[in-house]
Structure formats: structure tokens, C-alpha cells
Image (cartoon, rainbow over all chains, first blue to last red; front, side, top):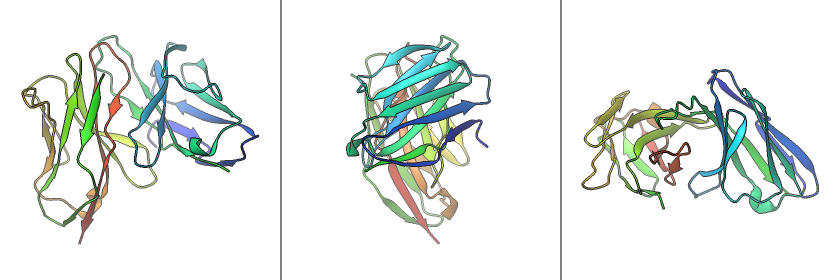
Length: 115
Length: 112
């Protein structure tokens, strides 16, 4: 148990489907992140939430829609995805102390396949 | 912008061999540097970190020294085990930023 739980672990969806990825952290942190891990590419930051406000959005297409209803939960809503969106989606959390020293703790990820 | 460059993998070693995985970076500020490890089917786990020049991070027999003059943070271990087989990611966080910039990862395979 890493303290950051992601569900589902695996997801297969068609391009016209709508699905959501869920992340829950049990560490009392105040910041949460979505990263995308594609084959043979560095992890790419998608979104950052601090104190439930989105503070970073790295030019992610609008077919990805994040939601952070409280400091413990983070969602990524998916609709009309493309096959190139197939990847491992990782959630992370940290305690943002404003000094840039916070360690990020990662979940095990959701393996997404878009058909 | 910021970037992290790691050596291409996979790296294949025999048990008890010496390990070096190279990592160099570019950053606009004074970054903190990290090594994360990802075991099969799991998320990333922090392995070690260093927050300023000449700091040495260490954990589980792994070490890395923050070298500002060469902008490097190479990962080393004196004697690897089969259980060290995983993907290793070098990362940085620049001053004033929350998010990490990752390298592409290096897969390590240790054979008995």
C-alpha cells in the first residue's frame, strides 16, 4: 500500500466512450498531479492541483478533463480519446510547503488502451 | 526549458556487478534532483534525492552526487542484486516549481 490508490488498474475503451480515472491519497497531502507515461517517452506532466485549485495545465487536449473535489481525491475524465492516448496514467501527491522540497508519492497507475 | 537526459537502456548486468546509470540535466534555476525506481506493475518510488550542489543522496546501497559543474546526477551501486531489476528515472524540480521533469527512464536487468 503506497498511500496513493488509483482505479481502475486497467481500462480499455473505444474512441466514443466516456470514462473516468480515479486517484485517492491517504497521506494528508495538499497537492495532487496527473502524469502520462507513454512507451519510450519521458513522463509528461498533465495537471497539478494545489489546495484543490488547478495551478498547472501543460497544454493538454480538452478531451482530458481533471477534477479535484477535495484534497484527497483527483479524477481524470476522458471522452472521445484517440489511440495515441493509450498510455499509463500516473497520479501523485505531495505536501506543498511552498519551498519546493516536497517529495511526490506515486500511485501504481492506470493502464489505458484506446481502441 | 528544463530537461533530463538518461543513458539508453536496457542495462544488463550479472549479480554483484557495479552499476552506473548516467543522468545529466539542464535547468534555468537551482533544481533539486531525484532518482525514482519503478518495479514491474507498480508506480514510481522515490529512491534518493539531493537538493544542492555536492549533496550525496543514498538509499538501499544506491548513491548519486549532485555535480553542478558537470550538471550530472549519476546513479551508482557497488553490487547489484536480481531484485534491483526495474526502470530507473532521473528527475529534477526547478526552483519555485511543483512539478517534476523526468528523463526517459533506464531499464536495468540483473541476471543471477
